[in-house]
Length: 75
Image (cartoon, rainbow, N blue to C red; front, side, top):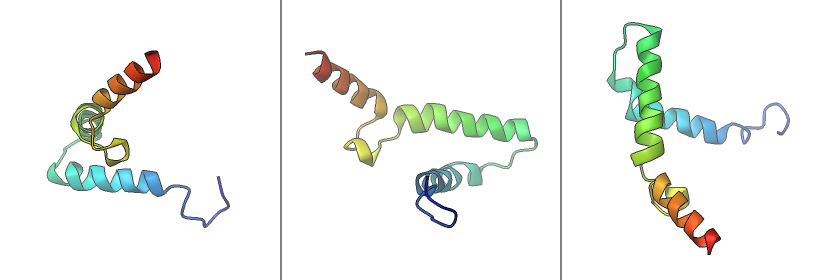
């Protein structure tokens, strides 16, 4: 980690939080904190980690990337 005031430390997390807010949380009006947690959890675990394509891994979904990665390292 770098020193205080260096914005490069949390740039990836800021980007992720911006994505989750614009793609998901701003579309829901939750009544309780537990409902908000459930909506965020479902977005992260279902859509973001399993379905959404990621540019850093060649616009593949993470399960496809993992399968291809393990297949190439196993041979």
